[in-house]
Length: 492
Image (tube, rainbow, N blue to C red):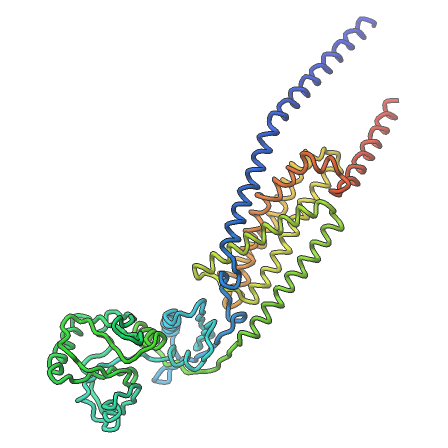
């Protein structure tokens, strides 16, 4: 019996030595690995700082770098109804073609972030931010765009000829009083240019004709050049310009002048470029949003964001104490990246801030704060489970981010559905919601995880009361004490 007890004691001593050696080896490995981990986390935070600095440079000043939509910037919203000349209803193909042509015309007007959408079976909604004259927009967008070139000596309308002889433009011609020698089908391309020799800086519209058009034009200009005869440029029965022919034009390059301003020249180019509409567009209704009303809405939205963030920050500091600083930092990094991304999209014409988009921004700010709370709660929960602060920062962050990613992916599906399948302002809501999720995910991996793990390597352990984890540590100690007492009673 004594020999057996001696062998058991020897075996127990060997087991303890083995465990102690393993523990010492693990501590040595952890000690050597710690500096590498610390360097990696610091490098991640430095990379995030560089990204945030670039974003700040990119979005400042905000009012210039981020494009504002119609409901904020102000502008014109017009609904036009399509009809066929024979009284029949426009087909789906007619409406698709008309919508595409109107989109091209609006884009050629130089309107930033203008939108053109089909509504129902026979209506088109046009929204032009920054515009102030709905009637001008209707006239330019709804033109059929039928262009004709007419010799002045071939016009039989005496009143119109008298006005044209006095060098008046926008003269209407009566139907049947003139015949054209060429129409817009002979035009290959249209360009707007500024007259370099003009003291007033007037603009011209330059046409490049097709082969057949160049031949027709050369023949007419050859006959009119000796007497400086004039050619009327007729658009939808209205003479837009009637220049005199100075010489024969044989190369098919024609310049239309008429004291055009930049806007009027661009408007003419827009109509000529787009061709004739397959339907007739009739004005239905319009709405002009003043910039003052839009800016008031923007200011109210910004106020809502500021108040929401203030309440969130107050909540975090009350319930999480020093750990609230971590969430505040993550929200700051989130906001800087978010604004930088919006500015980049605005620069490439892919984004315009609208009121629904502003609502999406407010929602994503709450989501970013929520993901921080999930990470902090999991961190504190694992401390209460008895893990050390360092180990809890590793496993708690991992599990907390995993839960946040699951929630973000579900929301991302909704955001993508809104962006790709919705129309109008709802698309803006889906876009800002999706962009916010992307920024939140980046913030989780580049700020929340490394920052919390760095803090767990010293500051949190040294001052648990300030960082709000002292109660969690006390709870873990109580649980271990209860377990130890239960274990002692059992052994006794």
